[in-house]
Length: 240
Ligand code: IPE
Ligand code: IPE
Ligand code: MG
Image: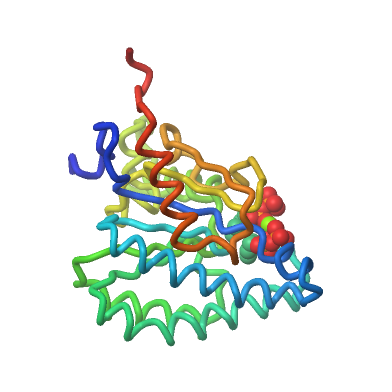
């Protein structure tokens, strides 16, 4: 269990890098294209970053692809995003197998279509034994949802007796339940400096990196720059 805690050593490669992939719509708008075109181009950045993370020996790369709040977007855009997910997951499965990538999806999956859920379950089952990079996609996820589902899990296992401990709650977060450590580095693209209800609990001591680059333009060199910035930081965890 101890390797679930992030490395405290400084100047190391982060064990878990997470990215809030933002700015697809603005990227498209700048080019006079539909927002969906931005999402399609964003997939290329996902490919480039996954490849680079594997190349650098990063153990966990997680991507915020769709928030619970994103369900409130126009139906047309939600549908376009969902069908893009189905297409991409099925198209990338052979690549995951070839490159020893384990694929994990986290979030409130009950809200997803059955077709997408089947695609996800198949890909996760097929790649479960892979030992290289773990690629995590956060879908229909929100940090508050995660904390509440964790509390409910603990309550159910306690049979409603006694107080919930911090350790119990932490262990029931969807990331910990899937043996995924807290993120060391959290990147957000597109110049927004907010967390947008992402891993609220898990990012308590995460290092943040904000860049103005829009997600479809975030590729290997931009990723490399973020890693270089991280390497210069000193993580103190409240100590001296
Ligand atoms: C990120 O890009 C992708 C998702 C949230 C699904 P956006 O679609 O939020 O793009 P902007 O922020 O409107 O430019
Ligand atoms: C955050 O981006 C969610 C994802 C990247 C999936 P949003 O574009 O939804 O965030 P806000 O609305 O700007 O905070
Ligand atoms: Mg956005």
